[in-house]
Length: 156
Image (cartoon, rainbow, N blue to C red; front, side, top):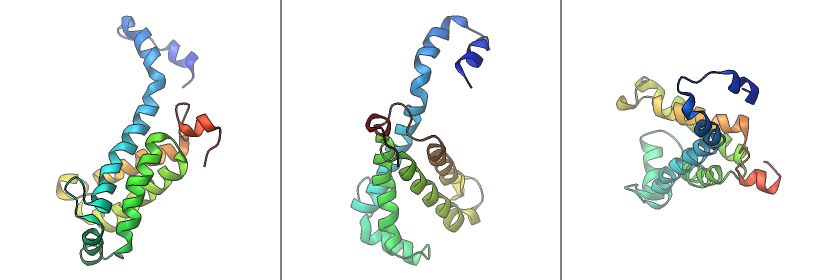
């Protein structure tokens, strides 16, 4: 929506218009940083055993025995969540990091959660689908104006 289209919409409480207009440019970077920062602890659980995680060896064993995935996928997943989350939060190699996260979440939805139904409370695909779609939105949009990609003038 363009600025002209936004201005033609009449707010219910016009007193807040200056505030919302001033803060609107920060909505997208806030979402990008939140998505990246919230992926990182999941990767830290897998890679380092932080935040109640089991570390790489135990996570690899879980992937192999319970999920039927190669144990090496624990490393790949941990790197995407931790490293890709950091890149996404910084807005560096944003499209690449977001794409890796989106693909990883698609694999999680299809291979792990789909058979459990929709709701996350039953182990369903609701949560990884949401994260995958959020990540994919940054594949489409890139890091935006307030990203390191924009600062250096290059995008991957």
